[in-house]
Length: 205
Image (cartoon, rainbow, N blue to C red):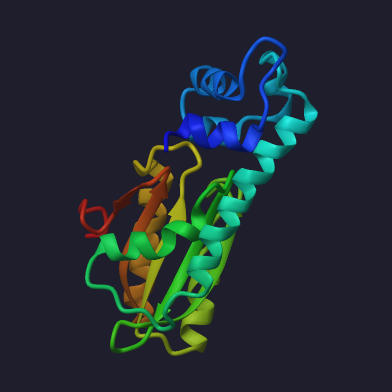
């Protein structure tokens, strides 16, 4: 079933001179992608004939329900997961970061067998307005005697390319980890169904 048909089912009816499927196609044409449609403010729907407050609320509720379903999948997934590569890390954390409109920086603590046993949200906002301080990142890792750590954060922009701040912060965290004896395994940036591993790109050496 196409995206337009799924949207039409949610909308149920169209406008005065268009069907539900016609309205759904107009929405996709206007916003371009489902991601842009999801992120649109309620006021932006007023440009589309047939999209009143009720239909806008229906769409918003459907997208929010989808986000909650994805995040619940992360919460109920296997405990103490073990990852063989960055793709597996991405697939595990993707639901947790899906649809977030602001940056979130997560630190995962791992044991000597490279299994995650605890996760901490270190910062929310942006990495520049809500700085990630090494002491805050490693405080719990030291307390919990973590053997290594893994960092994951998102880019709401849709582009997982690292900023200069991302690279500088990662290097500072790697240096701090070397000092306290806790290895930084990787730092993943997740964005719009894509990811980038700073370790694989050589930014952590």
